[in-house]
Length: 373
Image (cartoon, rainbow, N blue to C red; front, top):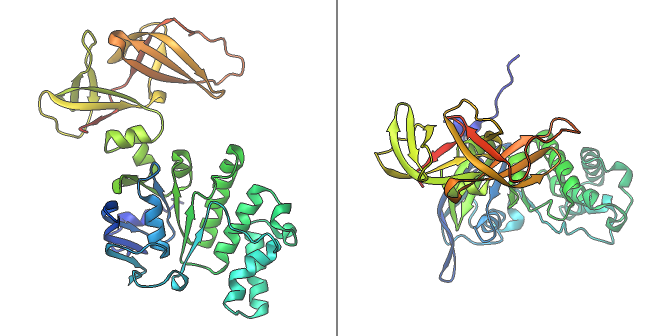
């Protein structure tokens, strides 16, 4: 049976749960968000990604009601929420610090928001038990926050945030306090919980790997502007600008001038080097300035010259061994450098290529992306 692809943003009949319409936010003379419009759909795990100061946290705080909008509108399920105070919005926010009450048990922390709503005692107990099961915390229910690990505290904060069944959960750098291995494990737990509850999650992060792992779509931001909004695969394989290509993952970026040729272009990029042949749907005029971006894992490295169109001679000047992969830094003629990656498939591989070796690096005509800016 064919699996249904989750892509409501491609369906013109789908109504977004969140709509930013021409939203601007200023702090005095500084504009943090510039005339921004964005749709986020129900059941999405949406990531706001960008460097510090790009405006992603400001967007989240406006959604939560902690910042007022300078101009424009934000709609939640079709309702303009600009004038609605934070405590009246069907939105919960989970902070990086978790903000758990140290004197309350795990059970009481999760129940706190429900008790403030004066719900029936049995109803509260049933909901807390459901959240404990969902986050696999049942056996820690009586412990205080200081008696459990960082990853477990993170799950308590998540359970507390989900207990009131919000339409929307905002996560501000939620895994920043965890070590790398635990962070990676928790990312998959977050995805699993989001799928089970059906709650729309919006996560703010500067960690590209985290955004690529958890998100259905990513909005890459820079200085208050949306640079690209797309799925992780599209962002990685088809960045729309040098900024996005350079910000997401590792990449080789070469400057040159494009000349149309067949189904693509021929790029003159370095004196004494053969031109790069690249496939592209973008139309370039003869001699137009361009950038060519190719990921290191799509660049091959060989001792003997391979038979392929884009092949360049160089010398290995550095090797980064990362266990599963090795990254070779190769200096080409004219001082240009290119990174190539090789998977270390065998545990004890005799490395054919080492420092100072003369090598050939290359890639196919469809391996990279030709960018105008």
